[in-house]
Image (tube, rainbow over all chains, first blue to last red; front, side, top):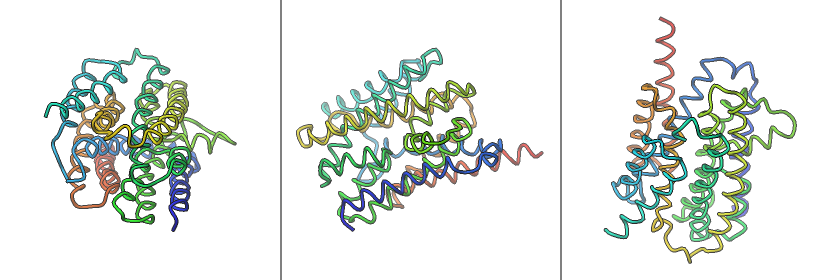
Length: 101
Length: 225
């Protein structure tokens, strides 16, 4: 498979998931327990992403500047600091730690 | 979005901008992985799902070839289908808006929409504004990243990798007030992190779906009593 074919095929496959979810009959998804499952899945997968993006590197599970940045972000979210400032602060913390260490 | 007082517009713009910044690192990493400028842009415009895009170029960069790159992008894209299932009854899309809305069904648009529950109008506004904002910033800054290429150096030097984790944490933050969801989030983050040592990239996040299903079954059993 050429790289271009792979790019287009993978894009079509990802889009098919998105469209499929919107095409499933409404009576099925209006079931409260199905909606509850969809909400649980969202929280679980996003939390999974937080774990992967914070603690996993090419070398395996690591505790590095990203963990400190996430801890700072959690404190700032707790203090109700606006989203964009928290994200910038997290990037700054990781960047500064890497410069100093 | 720690404060409910913040308007949906401000949240959407903030999420779009923050995610867009991460697009710089995607553009730079994609070119570094061996994709050209237009292949990189095709991924951001057509695939438009950060996790799947990073998986595609990340797996391709390891020299694994095109097919594993396609498969990992596809698997990681599954969660967009779950988001779409949640969004479908909220959005009630028809005609041309259905494929357009489908393309904008991503982590961020779903999360902002979810954070506006139970207000339907705000959930819809959050979905569209965030989806469009992310699409614009993500593609613009992917282009910037791809053009800067090696000039930006290592995206990690700028802390862009840490920004992503903070952004996803912020998206689920309002839900974590509920102790059951907090427990689910902690267990899921731990599970995905732990499993990353044993299974290929992209799979651990999918397996957190199993954790959600276990919580769901416990919830159903509790209700039936």
